[in-house]
Amino acid sequence: MSIKLNQQKKKAIHFGKKRFMYLFGILCIIGLLTKAYVDTNIFKINRMQFQSSKIPIDTKITILQLSDLHNKVFGEDNEALIDTVIQANADIIVLTGDLIDRDTDDLHGVFSLVERITALHPHVFFVSGNHEWGNHFAGALVEGLEHRNVTILNNRNTEITVGNATFNLVGIDDVSTNHENLNLAFENVNQESYTILLSHSPSILDKYEDVPADLILSGHTHGGQVRLPFIGALVAPDQGFFPEKDKGTYAFGEDKFLYIDSGIGTSIAPIRFLNQSQVSLIEISGEN
Image (cartoon, rainbow, N blue to C red; front, side, top):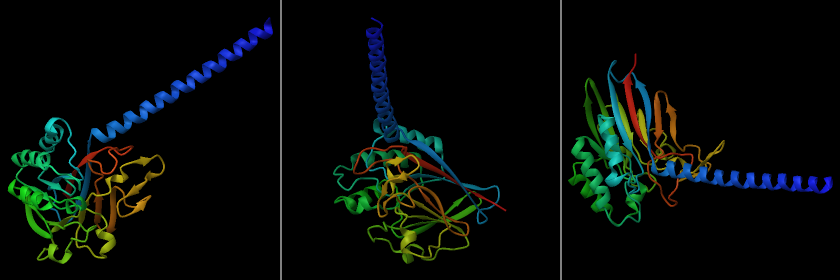
């Protein structure tokens, strides 16, 4: 009798362990799916700070960077993005490419977003990404952005004054599709002033040894879009597997920095993991 009871007890324990592992597995899957959903559909604000002796002391410049939207919508009529624009109250807004996807055939959504942004902010700048150049409506997009008071920095530069600080804002067309003209973009730029370059792809530094900018703002990589613990990004455009420059800040000279925003949208696969969608609020202040 005791032998039978022991066997029944062992079966019950074994069944309990199997049931626990089964439930644990389900919870893990639910957790992973929830994390992927949040990373893909709820964006954060990534705050970055830089300093330069070219900026007057007690002066700061704020820049809101939106990159790689890929026509994605956050909230009804992009209300979440509009709220962020209002709260950030940045000095300028920069759109660093891939507002649309290469197969986007309806520009209404992105035009609606841009109209609402320019209604709130007078200083909005755009540089093209590879997906714009791959889209049949690229010309209509650029024309529509200009019509909606966005400044197109297609291998051009402009000088901007914020408070006591005057800086150069330079933009190049997408380097990954060979549409950039670096010499034209930096024509007549005063190198004594702080200089920011908008380049959709960070591969600008792989193609040119000397980029005369103090700060380069890029996107394109999506931060790998999917990342794994201890490994990081699995793949990024132009870099292949396990990219070296996937997101964040990289020095490329004395007091010169490349910042790669991991972007707010997705491409190819509509998912992010361990790499939350983001916009960046960048502050540049003076130093002694």
